[in-house]
Amino acid sequence: MLTSFFGKSNPINYVLLSALLIFGFFIAVFKGVIPFQSASEILTALSLLLLFVFGMLLLDFVIRKNLLTGQNTFGILIFTLFIAQLPVIYKHPEIIAATLFLMLATRRFLSLKSGKNIEKKILDASFYITIAGLFYPWCWLFFGVLYFGILWHTVIEVRYLIIPIVGIIGIFILKTAYHFVVDNSFDWFYNISFTTSRDFSAYNATSLLVTSSLLVSFIIWMGIVRLIRIPALPKKERSSAWLILISLIATIFIAIFGSIKTGAELLFPFFPLAIIAANFIEKKEGAGPVKLFDFWFKELLMWLLVLVTVFLLVL
Image (cartoon, rainbow, N blue to C red):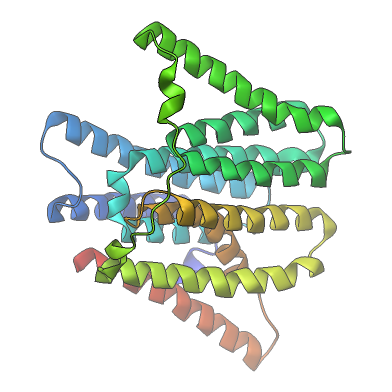
């Protein structure tokens, strides 16, 4: 049973999920989706694969460090399955890098609830979001999530609200200094573009249509369920739940407004959705027949996600 197997945190789970990423990667190489001819292409592709393994472990660390779910691996399972369904992501390293930095930022602002080293955590999060925006400018929308976290977890002080601005300026100064030394130029600012695209023709492909439909269904259904359940959560868990939900909304806007419409942009909502979906699956409902129905329903849901992934890999 999938829910029983991944309902525990065993080393074998991480091995299997890493193997799934590697398997999906080589299937995509075999199909010609991932460039894998020259030495530079091979090195780049393998580096991106390692980044995905790192991202999976980073998501698991964020979940455990902040007690976002129980002691299970549902979150990274869902995250890994969605990634395996979209090999086109490997063609957009800027989206992969931006997503990882958003995950690092999430790790920092979720820990604001401890009340320790608040200034440092805000500054770190602002650094990460700014760097993510250098890869994909629409990621700067994530500053809205950071400010929500600041207002929720801290006594409102002007210095806390200014720190993100200091973080932005700091990264911009370093970026400008780099270009001045390397390119003898300050005009890198002109390369920042908030262009958007409404060309969704790539979604006519069967594989992308299936994945996007599944993703949207998960977002609507599990997002609404999570929203309904938040008021009933203990106070110490409520803030993190709100931050993850708002992070999901922010990443959806990043994907919608961004200039890339190849399906790779769907990577942005994967990590907050994986956490929300894990909360949904681990939650035990009712007793007796209701509990039995709930168990089999979630078991079938997980198998559906696995079978869709296998189908798209062999398609």
